[in-house]
Image (cartoon, rainbow, N blue to C red; front, side, top):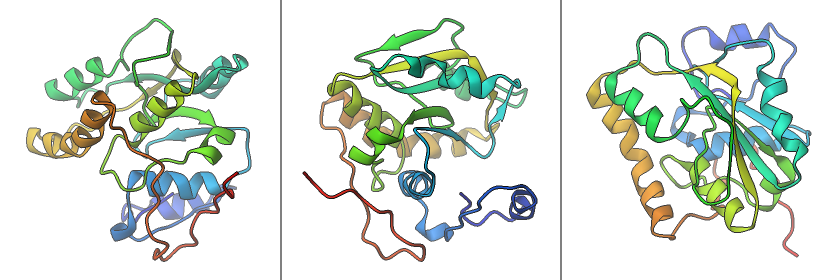
Amino acid sequence: MDSGSTDGTQAIVQSFPTTLIQIAPEDFSYGYALNLGVANVDSEIVATLSAHSLPAGSDWLRNLVQPFTRPRVAGVYGRQVPRSNATLFEMLGMRLTGVLGDAPRLLDRRPLFSNANGAFRRALWLEHAFDECVGGAEDIAWVRTMQERGYLIAYEPTAAVYHSHGESVWRHLRRASRDVPTVAGNLLHLGSGDRLRPSSHKTEPMTRPAPD
């Protein structure tokens, strides 16, 4: 998925045997980009990486999907190793969200997750897509719904990636502020649904299953 990069990413991606889906920057939301990407794959398990996440080892994907041997596991997120450019605020945020730990765990209540380095069951996504109308933390809203349905979220530290932004305090706070409404809503058990935006995008809208 690409939303208007200008650093040569498109040419690099097109040199590999993969599919590049492009959307206009003004159409971007994390939920929309994720939903459109997942709608265009056919796999039981879908793994996601942010553009600036780099697997730390060749066994990253194998370790990431291993917890899915448990039928109740809906999603798995892996460890994030900060680069040397990580700021104090960023390190604090990573610690609070539990992506720095070195012990695996299964969560049935705390809605912790990260699509920067994560994977989930596509069948469950078909039942409940990512919310396209929130500014951020669409992954947290999704896993909370899964936990309320009785599923587990696994943290797998051996599925590590290098990931950090190294941005200024102002940019960090502005980015974090997009997550606050979603996170606060989940803490208050308001949450967010699988709201999809009107199909006015320049790309084909996602195909949704018919309701039962």
